[in-house]
Length: 474
Image 1: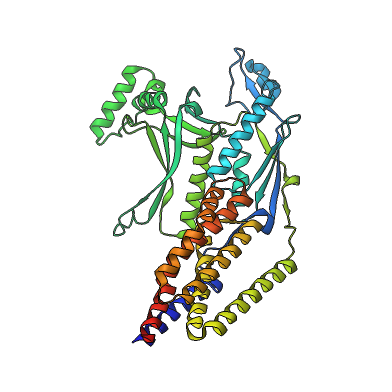
Image 2 (image 1 turned 135 degrees about the horizontal axis):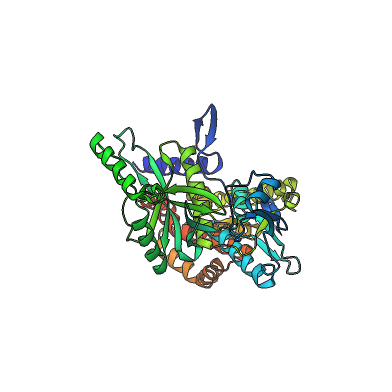
């Protein structure tokens, strides 16, 4: 029975090790794909993307009537036709001289930083060139970098306007927050099965009041349900004498940076102060769902961070990938060196403690594997300092395992003695974990998870193995 328990725990360790070093592969579209989350390396290990946001210098041509009002419907007219109608063209810079100030540049930088944080970007470097207003950003290179960059050049100007008169009804100043929400439909329904992604826009007190007024005014008109009702509707329109004033035309258009998100009217007044807009349709397809989530996340991020006062362009020439200073050959040498040291250390355990030393080796290998999995799913940005943190966690665990082997008949005493001694290290590690500078936080987080895992893993695995052996000795 005791042998069965040891074999079972050994198989558990073996499975964890295979997951950590090999992965779990499933077939997807005629290829095998690893389902285990990849490491999140910081810029000093994986490289970085350098981009420059340049202040937009372009001008926009608009058409105005004799009263100075903008005319959008006449953009295709020739200059002669415009003159005949009493219209004229004006060129307006996207960034006027009043906008191009140091204060606005600094405000833009802060908003971009806020966007990066909301998109979950860690370890970025951002600098403002106050003379030109250009913003230089260094981002960690990963699968989501291009999506992040696409958000940085967006101004984020939000407007709800009257579809007919183009009157601006609501702006960014009315928004309290925006977030992404999900709803899973009934799987037994052919039309509602799958997950639907929503963009949830919550308005502030003033915005909520405006939304209620707008939704009360711009209400959908029910279509006639019978020929008699249709005739009555036509008669009502004739009696009013002005079809342009019918409720049917009361619609709003929602824009971000001048691009229409939707044009609609409301079923009923909205009194809760929030709008929920469905993005795409309900789906069970993972790729389609992720696309909807990315789209909604981008919009929520832009709305939540506000309207950037200066319009920027992402300079394509400066969008460059910068390789890490550490070459692949140097990385391999470091890995093989660490592995050699670990192997020598484990051999010494077997030589010194014989059979229970072998149990310690099995446990220690499982600890390494579990820690490598934990740092992946804890989303730790692994910098060079983070690797140092992992190595120190392995050293501490080696010391703990050695103490447990020495006192395998008094495991509780060994635990207590070890963790009391590392209390100063634990306090320092927790403090480092909250520092936003990537090298320090990476070290703190890897060490933090290493110590937490030491306390849990060794109680479950190492302690169990040694207890089995201790009973055999008795």
